[in-house]
Amino acid sequence: MTETLGLLVFEDENDVPKFTEDFNFTISREGYLTRDNEPIVCSCCNLVLKPKNLGAILPGSEVFYCADETCLADYVSEYLEK
Amino acid sequence: MYRQPLAKLVRTFGLGKLLHQYEPEIEEKIKSGISDKEFISLINILPLDFKGEVENHLKDLMTTRDKMGVIRADMLLALHSLVSRLKNNEEMLKDFKLVLKSDHYKALLLSTTIVNFEDNGLMDEARRMKKKLESRFRPFGNKIYNWHRSDYIKGYFYPYLLYSKAVWEKSYPERFRRYWRDHLGFFPDSIWIGPEMTEKEIHDEITLRLKRGRPKVFIFGRGSLTNMALKASQNYIDAKPLGKNLKKDSYWADLGDSSSVMITLLVTKPIRDQKKKSKKRKSKK
Ligand SMILES: [Zn+2]
Image 1 (cartoon, rainbow over the protein chains, first blue to last red):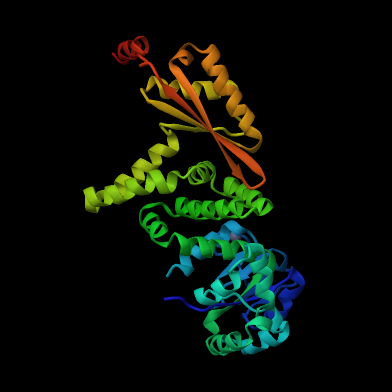
Image 2: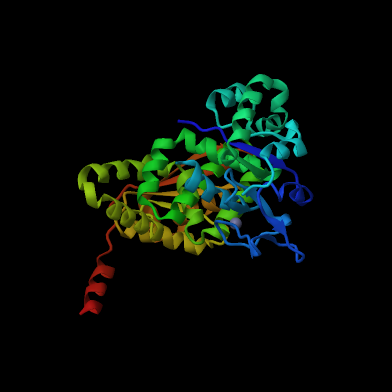
């Protein structure tokens, strides 16, 4: 079975504030992505995320990844294969 | 929980920024006759060419917010390649996933992507990702890439995996993992030349394999290391005592913007190493 996933493509950190609300996070004064006052980290490497190093938010919006392609392998193997 | 409908996201970015489809039939349509790189730029203008279909998908997507995400533009090529590799080698990768440690499996998945980039001439992307693979999955990432590049994953490990599954049934994952781990420590038939290797180290690696009774030794060199591979193996034959028992053969392959060489050193006369063996026995006592 194939599943259709929509991925909006954003260009760079300047686009990030445009979708904070939709994915239910905020950008703290120190410049970190936070949810319920907790910093959001890359699901794979635990890097604390800022708009600059945000790579992807996966469908469902609970899973965040940094902008490192090796972390995307984690995404593909953990989520897409199911 | 979500204060805004996802439709707002689409409005913010516009249709033009949408969207990545994993539906094979659409992907095939787009991809027929174009390279991966062009495919990526086409994703962004997808709605222009496939308006009807995309709008239907959009409706679906917007009503099920679990299916919507965002990705930074420069990650899209890697994602697409990872996904398409997975699809093209689904059965094999699934089998590996069942037995390998998670990090080893991820390194394998990334390796298939790097090889895919190289085969499609996307050499910059391949180099960048290879660097990350090496630093992230040290010390095994590069080895797994080498195995993949030299077709050992498909032609060597996978047959063994299937074999172990058939023979050992329940205990096969453990046994296969051991086999994989042993090979990461020492690959009996082959040497991949790395940029940090000296000629002496290459010679030592050859000697080690010959003394263990291997009937042949393969030496792989890529890009700037092809000359090193050729020179070191020729010097071994010309100058080393065991060299006179060997016959050399070379096979060249093109790899995107660089070439690679596989050298076979074939043992033509049996090599014995009694001296060392008896020494070892003594020291054990
Ligand atoms: Zn990460």
